[in-house]
Image (cartoon, rainbow, N blue to C red; front, side, top):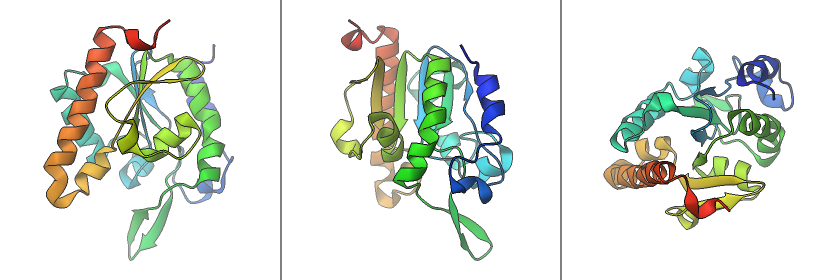
Length: 200
């Protein structure tokens, strides 16, 4: 089986879609294998510069909520559906721009290889882009939250909101944060019970 380290090295020179041309570097996944795998949308500005997933504000919130749910961040594998930062300029700032279907499809190659290398017991999709990458079609996060899903060939998957959606929620921030905590607490419970509902 191909290791995460070798996949990361191979992905460093990826040109499967045009996003590589404007990104600083490929941001590949990292962390523990065999347990919980968290899949986000794409690297942000901080991640693009540092070369690591979830090291910006959304990552800080994610680690905070994981701890509250009883999940050690060091026991998880974190990655994104798209490995290069897609952005548009706004003055001197680089503003996040949502990946499109062709970019998600191009990066599915890496996500599939990561899943095979990590062999997670449970995958949590953080947001609609991650869900689209795993389920292969556009889906609404609200329709999928709150219960595990079986995704062929043998993945157990939960879907929740992305931490960045909590940060952008304004007056509804506390409510969105509670939703994220609820879903990650369910993930902890499923892991503790061996995800029995999805195992034959």
